[in-house]
Length: 170
Image (cartoon, rainbow, N blue to C red; front, side):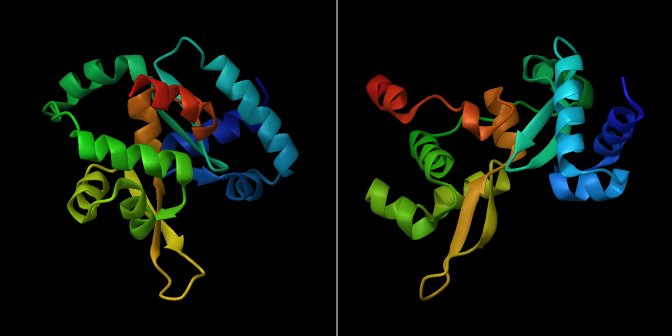
């Protein structure tokens, strides 16, 4: 394991939020391509361990391995969170596959108001605001979070199943 990889791991270990690739490169004084290579090596080294490298939109974070989340929750003493309602799942799926997306776009697809559902997903930390649209009114845009990926057991949004498979299951 290289000194660069160790430095990146240390930074990700103490970071409270996902860290952008450019910020990592600046912190370790390396080129982004070198950091990307070191991240791939780190990800490989963490396979079959208690933590995984989570990738979200060129941001990286070390998180609990999804298969161990229940053990960690028991240790921390968190209460089991209620399952998401069907409207929440629909809204979350729309955001996941169309992100970034405005609440108006979600409502246009669902055909019903999504204000309460969106608020619930925000409070659970599964979605977050990600800026404003460039259209008149500059609506807030939303995207999924690292927690969303962790709950689904994914390391990046590119690993979501193809949309057509999801539609066939409904």
